[in-house]
Length: 467
Image 1 (spheres, one colour):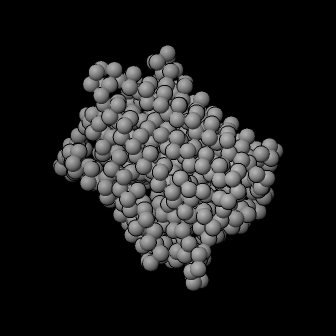
Image 2: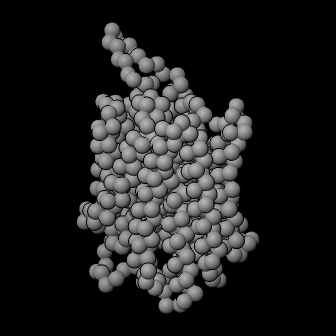
Image 3: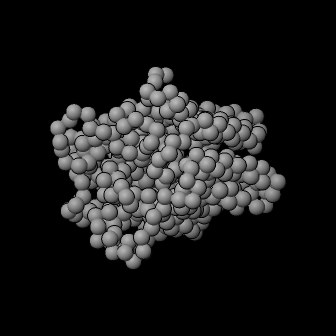
């Protein structure tokens, strides 16, 4: 691995950051991806799966504000980063062991542990981004994070595949619980390795990410009529539609279709793999076509994705559906990231990004609550005007409802959003990002770091390539 900076202290820190990222994606790809399956192992129902998928990330987003608030008082970023990472690692212990000790309360304990897990990593996130912004030389930022993200993506995908094969083999030996414990142990070990590398990173005096919140009335007046508010409303509304179905694909495949862990892993991994393959191409299209067209095209296709699950439960068919899903989500995530990044001024980025995350998290939570309730209430057979429809699982109706809600949001809000003035369209310089999560249906989830500086390019309208 070549040098990343002229200063040997900075270069050493960036080497440690690459190793931290690789170790962390072993956790996110190989362990976190199986949280819902672990709850399902203890007979979790649809409403509980919905809570597990949506409540911890929602509450975890609040800890971003806590991390920024602590930044003003601690004054050192590494302390907050290590504390958050330590909390995340510690959460894996009760998540793995308490359900075995108290099986009657297994699922609530898993959910509470997941709240601690996401709270820790989100608390560290603002300070980590601030630290990396100071460490990575501006003229090497895109190259460095591009290399780091490629390594992390490959590692996370490999960890997901290996953990799925491991769990499938232990299930064949009728030792499923042991297989899960090995997955948790490997995730904990990987996070501890990650923490060690984080502890070796230099924390230079710099701009600690601090929470500077103006009076709420003043903030509301600034935001309510802004392009940011219009976009955030659209994005959160779409997250509500996504939340109705997204948490329940795991339940559908493992419980209702009876997939083995191996088959489930393959179907889930396709979306991640295809997204990784198509991100650069989406970036090129964003450069040539503009973010508006990318967002419009992928936003129109989002309603189709859950509806495709109505027609067949055959693994080969679902692999093709997942390939389309990964392609669409890559373009949607990229263009959505461009919009929100360009609409927020740097001095208010900590607060508004946190509010944007909380809004979308709340919408996802409400959608998952509705989906969980409907999943426990909807029948297998529905009759209307003398016609009867029977499906393999009540969850199939959720996929249809989710598609219809997404379609309504796309029709009502997307044209209005794209016709609004003040929203950037072009793409001039790529954003840099890191992998933070891997979801079976949405693929890779990214966190924005900053923008790559222009390198002898002609001036163009403001915009960028993301994710």
